[in-house]
Length: 279
Image (cartoon, rainbow, N blue to C red; front, top):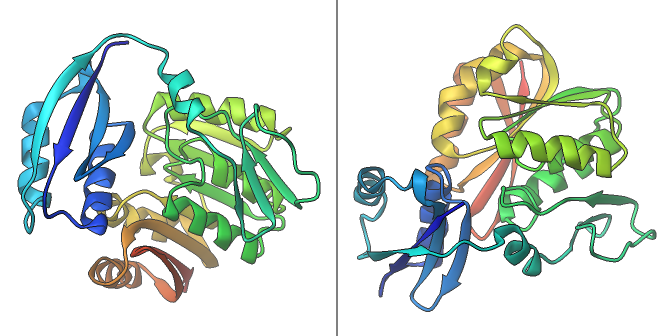
């Protein structure tokens, strides 16, 4: 597969602004990012490169800072091998160890998740994923029926099952992610996860004890109504993929309008995760 690199440079961009821009680029097809001095490099399959979509995104996102970009088409190479070489294991809350198949085991850690680090989101390294893992570790998933929206590699679904969930429906619009979940559940000796291709229409007509949604603010806003219909009374909703402050306040208002009550939040580097309960 041919890839293009887009190098973004700015003399005034703050770390949180860069993170928000990276998150938005991920939503339009960019799948790998590399930090450089005064900016970052984003990679995308050349066939998916849409200059108009990129320009529209920058007009919307780059409001308080200057930013420039250059595009380079790069030669074919083993992108997964390159990505894997930079993948390091992590430990969440001292009780959950996330590693790849080529890392050593840590049997002394109560929960271990083995992830094949293909170029899809959900390795636990991003603050949003780490906070969602922390929520799963701190709450009761025993015998629960769970939906994992925007499942990525399936890392949240896998931990939910390890924490006792009866069944998890893992949903993503990316075929690579759906295939990755199927592979990773086998690596973790799990059968009670079904991965499906699509969006919130996949949970229409079903009711869940818990919904996990680590996506982004705009998609969460679009899907909240379905979450309200698909979460049983007393059920829980965990969301992440947005910033603390204005983003959270907007999401709280929308969630409350469809029957959820805000419980609490976690914050890392301005990224936010939040817990709601269905009335």
